[in-house]
Image (tube, rainbow, N blue to C red; front, top):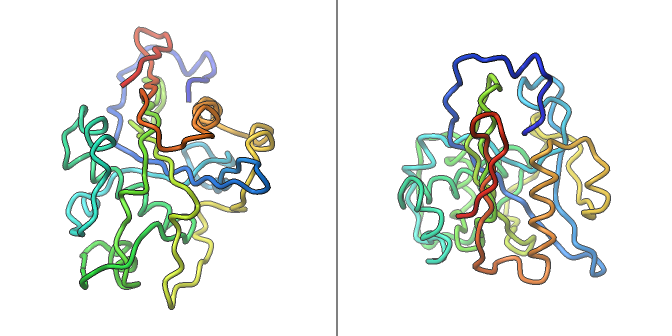
Length: 234
């Protein structure tokens, strides 16, 4: 995220970053910490061919969907510091929706009552008889794409364990065409993939949380200011 050729750093009007969310699914296989990643289609304008976690921009439907569960209080409090509680919940939902759309995976729990949404992806998700399991997510990082990029995102990174995944009756996972070659990678192997620089930084944060993924700890915040990387915590 913070790498760019010199000719991209020429002064120009910065594009306003759009809110986005990413979900990092982890699991321990034979005591080895693994992360779920896929390869972005070469047709994408933003980071084509890179290996990434499922994620994407916040949609209006993410702010409007109704359900009974919520973020854990400490996660909501930290996430709501920038944008408020409604946007915080929307970002968590966006991470879950993007994982459903890009990877065909359901981070959800059985719904106590039928729900509907006008948003196509959420309509399909809710039709499975589940609702998004916000309580399984922990906020672990935030990063804003540098000003010299023509597409910019203010991304919140969440982590969830593989045990949060459910397989509702009637649901078959299919490739979306957006995230290809989806697989579980030990972190050491993941570092050898073609990754965005911010993904390498987030992998460091995941390793720090290996023993307790959901610990309530400061969240690193990465962005550029006056042409230099700025590292902060939330």
